[in-house]
Image 1 (tube, rainbow, N blue to C red):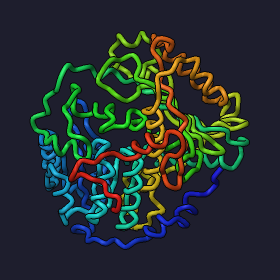
Image 2: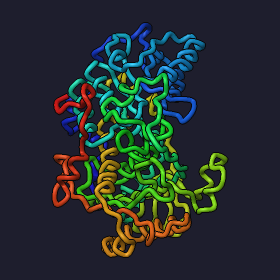
Image 3: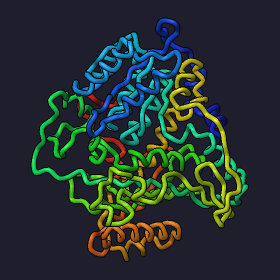
Image 4: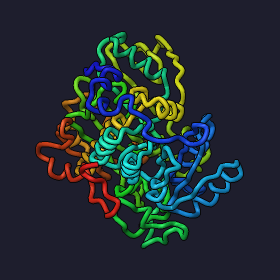
Length: 487
């Protein structure tokens, strides 16, 4: 295993050399306030972003002032601007993020837009001298994530790529317990993202754009194509043009936990995925069931996404009552070792008996971001641009294998993967889960992705499928919303 501590890595990396203890490079607001803008506010129905949550959290931090809000849908701006006014906050409202970034009265931006905008806004903000708090996932593809890292270093900006578990000190303590060999050799890390998702429905033709929305700005770097789903907002997660499926929605939190657990600061050399969009004939493109092997050495990551409930009886019920009870499973990362396992900040023996429960207080991710903005000590960030890029790179690799795959009979899938006992057993569990939902894999075939070879130094695929795979490392950007080769 790559037993390099995060602090040691950061102090000896090219990235840290450019970014450690950099000067402020800006003038703070009155009373040394940090003036923050939130880009992407969301809607009351079919929520389109985490902007309201970021507004709520940042305004609680002493010395932070909400200075501006931005959304390309004016109907999202109006209620938030009223809320800010009612709280006595004098905020400027923008529909175009480029105009916001031109303002000299903003120190940092919180990026809560759809995924396809995340990295580009972060890069533009760095170029404009702003620090960045970018919501998950930090990138829509591997290429732009790396460019975000380069922009943070070049312009000496603080970029916090937020992932849920990094503020949980008990997780870090539990992982360190495993790293020290207290449970014997680490074997593999199993990531879980079990969250039921209902069908998004199927439309018969082009749908109207919400009247308040500037659709050109909404599309931004993505192709400007007709809206072919019921809701513009939120359901973009299940469209490859703008989203990354549930592995990039909720799954990124636990993908990040897995990479944290295996203590790796580069992408793996191989990946393979099995999955599909089962049970629904709808306008969603991304898989609602995905099993991925991210083949780190010596400790691989096995990651599962399940978007269907625990069995088919649930499909006729009102899911909104209590979503979590319909799975009876959990989210997170399980570190499997020779003599036990680590889960949710605790260590267990092979019989499941608790060995030790860890506790460790850490401040919130947003407070950490504000503290580092003031200190400029980038090695104290929970998840910097590099962390965000690498964890997102894992989910992008998983999705690329899936997108290059073919529908394959279950017997052939089992024969292909039989050499990896852990992966084969996981596929058996997935097959049983689908069967409980009335899905017969003999009739409804799963997609088996190719085993892709990857060069972590160049962050490009190699080998048999590399030509097609490397086309998905980046995208065709729509001018003028282009992520440049040189930031």
